[in-house]
Image (tube, rainbow, N blue to C red):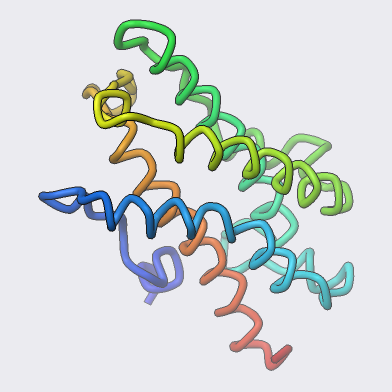
Length: 176
């Protein structure tokens, strides 16, 4: 049961073949994410935003702020991979970041940040050549090279994953 609450759409699985059509679909999902997130949280009051999506899990407020943190880091990883030769990225402690003071503030700054960030990020993604899509970075926590085309899929999944967290808690609690 807890696994279903943690991963309501399942974990990300990299397809064997990442086609241009699939990349286009993923980039569209990333582009639409800020609007979809705003739609999911706009009617929630402060108590609802402070509700965890699962026992021992983050609150909806923390999920919104986490998305901004995570997607900022991803844009930086893209830029590093595009401007350096297989850089080793700096991981961060998501759980610790979620506990910082800015993770408890109103969500509107993170929603605005996601609007601008996703506008820039998807413009960058759409501009990538086939060669650039295969550029890589090293994630030391995973101990492997990760290509930008795979990262696009991971972040399309990431957005859907957290939208599902919010939708599931809204369903369970009868807010929708």
